[in-house]
Length: 391
Image (cartoon, rainbow, N blue to C red; front, side, top):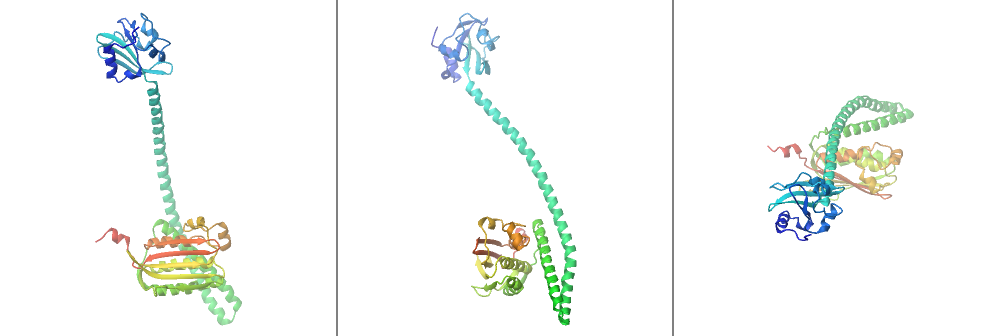
């Protein structure tokens, strides 16, 4: 048996770039019988126990070759054919220099890789369809959540209006009755009316916080910029927070390192609300301590900013507690709510209002030492709509 491939067949394999793959080759007669099996005899071991015997019907050794001979002028190729269990080959029936040849090129590894690739492709296709399905579900859930949020906002707005009207009447009448009780010398009645009045104001504050939170989430808060003296606003707010400081025996100090802050143009009510919330929060969580307010007008590349810093000597917080501090309905932990009360809305509203006015609110704290809240608000409010659509 020849161990060298005939030159025409070697040239044919070279054109296929398959000569290095040790193909199994057999020259076949027109009636499908083996004439010779040149080349490396071991090349057949991958496809059959041994090379097909001379004179045998090739279909007995390689069933897939049945009916392929005599080979056509143009090579006939059956790609990735399983010639025996687990073994795949490209089967060539080629007419080379007038002779019919059967060539088997082992592609088992290539076929396995392609099957693996196809399997992965099928998995990716399934994942793509699942992702598309999940995206549809998420879009529906998002729409449902937005509709529910809008309904909640409308409900809170209507309910807070219904609640505030009678509460304001209670607060107003309790003020009048306190004045009358003082004139009549009925001190016990004054004390009771003062309790009713304080409870009504506290409840009104909670209701207002709920409404502001709902408006902020829905993007419905409107600002009403006006020119005002920031120093007067600070003094008024300090007077308003004094009873809260006295309740816990706290001392409140105000520092203006750069001198008077001066005038600014933004929403006066919202700036007062921000400062009051910060100071009242410090008073709530500090007992027999000191609360220091620092206020300054600072020049920045974007213009002047009002910088407010409220520093207390209260209970302090961990880094994890600070991280969720400005989220709605969040307090440091559940024990804080039980001990100190509150809804956890005040600081959330502070950050939302600061950002609405073009500023920011931040905090840092150390457990057992105290907390520092810093706020910056532009002293000249610029409506974002006017910058987006210049005239």
